[in-house]
Length: 246
Image (cartoon, rainbow, N blue to C red; front, side, top):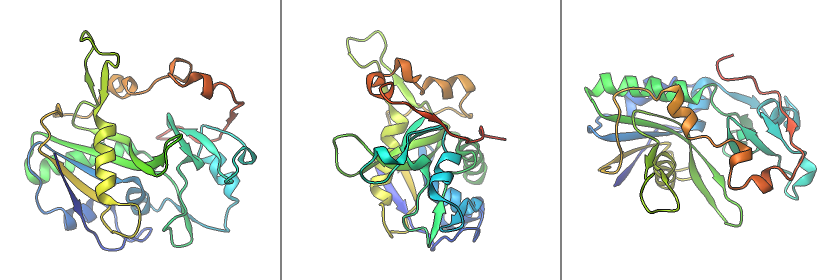
């Protein structure tokens, strides 16, 4: 697998739309590649920012979350939240490298992934092209952050090993690709918010967007999750995030 970072100019909120940005910085993509884009860049292109001080941080997190825990439970002053079926601190709200602004998650990361796939397919005449929208988070009992998948299109997110003598029956291909892309893109001021992943013999491409059933297949209901004893041991409060597309 090859992971190549794509450098951009410094992106400010509302300074450019996403597709024109991609037109400027991506000059060629080979068939059988995956384009990974950080969610922060998508959000900046959408203008999904709020100046710090204009809104109460706790109110913003509640507004961006499906479920949340009170900030007092964290010694670091962070909310633990579940947003769009993802366990993530602060409902995805990011204030690092935000120029004095809170940067929220994209309005509809899946719609963006589908749109970028359609653009790349037409722009470069490709039949096998995938797209990932990524973010990064930390994992319990491990220092540092790793990349996660928020949305994908154009390939199978899971490789199925059901029926083989393995304890784990599915491989999280989309999550693994997101982790590799974020390592290359970096977490600071690298200005490489896009990465092209190529030479991917383990990726099964599909010349279409994922179906509703395929999107649902990557999600585990909290009660069925391996970590259900931890997830159910606290009293989650309901956030006020609007469903995607409303």
